[in-house]
Image 1: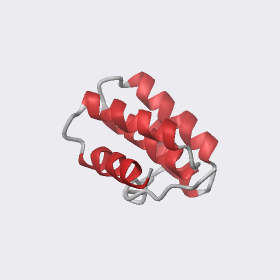
Image 2: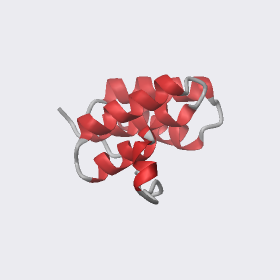
Image 3: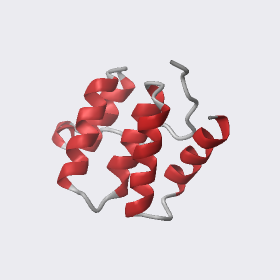
Image 4: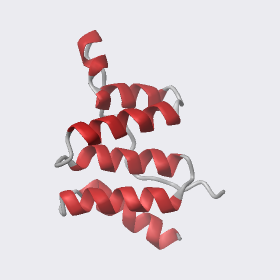
Length: 102
């Protein structure tokens, strides 16, 4: 399966201490940085379930799916993020990149 480039990484998400490790977004970012894409995806899915009106967990799921090389799933995740937050710039940019490189 073709690996897709993605513009925005999780570098901006940092862990500030042990308490934040319990936050699924922070945990997912740490797992992503370690290369545990399946674990990161589970953490971001957990965050999405806990905060269904927040586009960020959906966007981050798209980043992971892109890193896994799954254009279909990443496209779905970016579109879901944009449905929640139509002006989510990172989701819009990454979706456009996938559609342009299709």
